Image 1 (cartoon, each protein chain N blue to C red):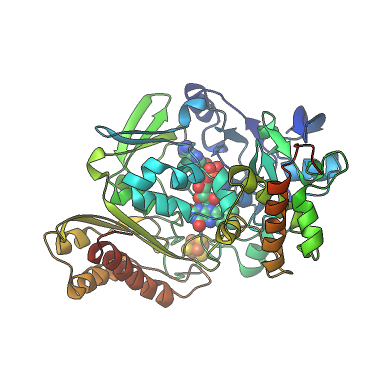
Image 2: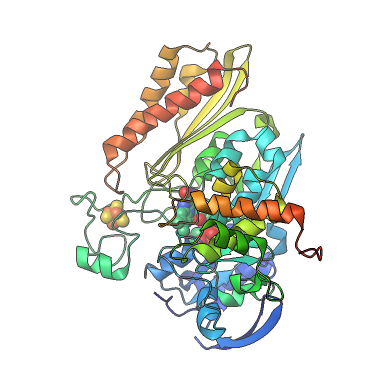
Length: 331
Length: 165
Ligand SMILES: Cc1cc2nc3c(=O)[nH]c(=O)nc-3n(C[C@H](O)[C@H](O)[C@H](O)COP(=O)(O)OP(=O)(O)OC[C@H]3O[C@@H](n4cnc5c(N)ncnc54)[C@H](O)[C@@H]3O)c2cc1C
Ligand code: SF4
């Protein structure tokens, strides 16, 4: 199927790009790697007047690490570059693992970190061709009036289906956002709205320009666990990210993030409260896994059942915590 | 939306085409340039049949807007053989039966070519991982891995461009 008509703008500088976004307002859309935007355009989900291709903006690239200030990642850094980066692998393991599970190797060569953090939410009833959606009845998120997942309500439950956001949340990441008014920063945990229809706190004339991870979290052990239909290609159906600091077997700090089960990626803060200061025990792991399944709320938004996805959250939480906590190597 | 002239570099040659901005590189290659080696295998960018190399990096041409890739050196399967001689990877696919229906083969050869340029001696596991996003419904992959391994051996005996046969 071909794409709907649009104008293509290719700014070379960030200040120029945000002005172009401001010019076109709600009729503009950003495209970076295009691996989410283009399939969605093809499915008739968007009809922008202008696509603003930000790939040519040199200042948005690059990975920089400084032991005092931490890690800085430009929004255009590809997932391949993150997964293969030796500094990310060594200091921020959970992020390298999460980036390395996104889509397929070829898609990771194109997909960018900015695009991964700003993905459109996904649902069985939404990510389909116009013909399919029309035949099954349009839904609230696009062209219709009811939600097929939760028909009684007024909300869309389409799922946050990116991998790196949960991992970056466990690392206290901050994002930088550029607009014609300058730059602002916000913790990644505040970026997501937990609303399938309106997913992120980003103005129409704003671009996510980069991500910062504090030096304090360098060296944390990390693990990312992911459920998908085809393990080489597909979007996550459930995901658990864990970053942990151990000292002589005692858990000094731990953060656990969830993805692909709610309209936003989420941190399960209770896990930290439960486990800090403790030695490994199967009971402690079980208590944490229990907190995880109380937070994750999968619904019938995918081909896999909510029950299975919820069960897998418990399995992943156990598996990641046990692996990181009960071994010396960490991985 | 008006069609605009764009310049693409494909397999070392310059092409000028006049296309609308929503035109995918895959369609320009297949329909405007008549390079039909790159295939459209799915409609959701998940099969890998349309893989091309952009500056040596495997990418899906069904996701690439042609006008956005005017600065890149694009390579398609048509450019893999040199001076009428098959590349050792292509030879491997012939000898080992790596292609059956052939639809996935161009994408797989390009991904394998990029892999061998970065890592001339990959393990079978590394080959499998590199090709994991390229779906093949015929071969069960065993012959594909054997084809790539054939090329690895050939390239070690006589690297491409070394002048040795
Ligand atoms: C078959 C298939 C499987 C996939 N599997 C996965 C998976 O397992 N896990 C996963 O996480 N993703 C998956 N993806 C989605 C995608 O490949 C990645 O998430 C990728 O990182 C998206 O980045 P991109 O640069 O291609 O984004 P784009 O498609 O260019 O953009 C995605 C969204 O982000 C916005 N955007 C992009 N950059 C910025 C920016 N800097 N500032 C503000 N907004 C921006 C765009 O407007 C758009 O809404 C899959 C895609 C396909 C086709
Ligand atoms: S959750 Fe409901 S409204 Fe949202 S995309 Fe799915 S069916 Fe549509």
